[in-house]
Length: 282
Ligand SMILES: Cc1cc2nc3c(=O)[nH]c(=O)nc-3n(C[C@H](O)[C@H](O)[C@H](O)COP(=O)(O)O)c2cc1C
Image (cartoon, rainbow, N blue to C red; front, side):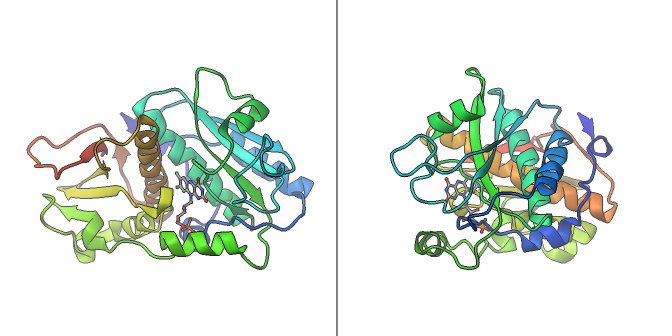
């Protein structure tokens, strides 16, 4: 159990940055200015998570190799030459912590005017793992390019956004519940926490699946994840990373608004869970 105050608010405007963030896959052919890179490195060095899990961060400068070579992104990313990554031990809460910390970094990069995009699938994992020197015994869930966004999206990027409906999000009634999973939570019932929940709703997720669910019960907000049975272990890990991203938005917004609270493993006992829904944290 960790007190929420043990994890600091990021030194950027949170709500404004969350609203501004959007995945960028098309970049200007321009390296990061040294002072920007330095700031990013400082941000990286001071990341932390409320679960006390070790999350390692990496940043490398590489020109993207042409297709078939080591540092590829299957043609998804254009123009970027700096990449950030994370590695973690294989512990369930570390998967969540990875999402939390890397999303904090993504928000900080966004506040600097830089573009980013979480990549968990469309990159050559082996090539990047060796370039970033990821320890053999650690999981390497994701990377992100970081750079100056191009004025216009590539055709590939535009098609991807349309296919995943990247600019839209599920309604409140599909995500947030009160006391049980049959009763949707209305904004006015969330009081001061309506804004943190709204910021959670804007979180990015793998293929925009938005697998997070939140149940309010008394003064507590219980966080769950939903995914189909039979997905691979790697896919399950990414679902927990998605929840960590959502928790970054929720927690950092509560800190910006000065709301009090703490994280705790406190799964409610008598709540009937919908199929394929799993508890994460409270
Ligand atoms: C954990 C995670 C993994 C992702 N993996 C990929 C990926 O492999 N390739 C890609 O192009 N986009 C990837 N995305 C980006 C999502 O498709 C994107 O966040 C989502 O469609 C919502 O769009 P937005 O970020 O612009 O709000 C990933 C996002 C997350 C959070």
